[in-house]
Length: 92
Image (cartoon, rainbow, N blue to C red; front, side, top):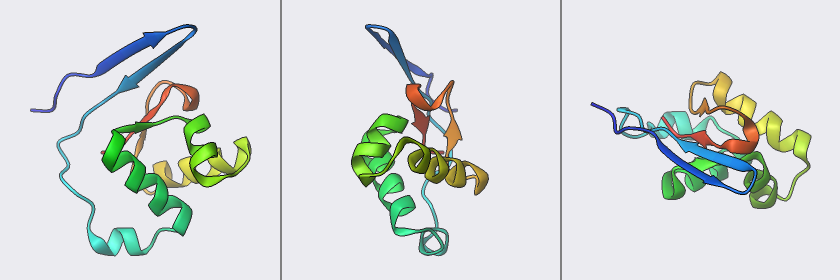
């Protein structure tokens, strides 16, 4: 059974972290990702969630590029969107 969501509020933002029952990504799945997407997955493995702003800083890219990279991972079913890009994503 997955853990209950973790909710953190501060200022005018909320970060929701959801936990999944999926264990790890297969090496083949990771090899098919771009370098940027692998950085995002590595960050998620360490921290459990990522926001678009953190993604922008992590990759040194614009807001639109960060959103494209995150959306690409969602399309590949590697991560799931949690509320909004500003509020965090999770690693399944």
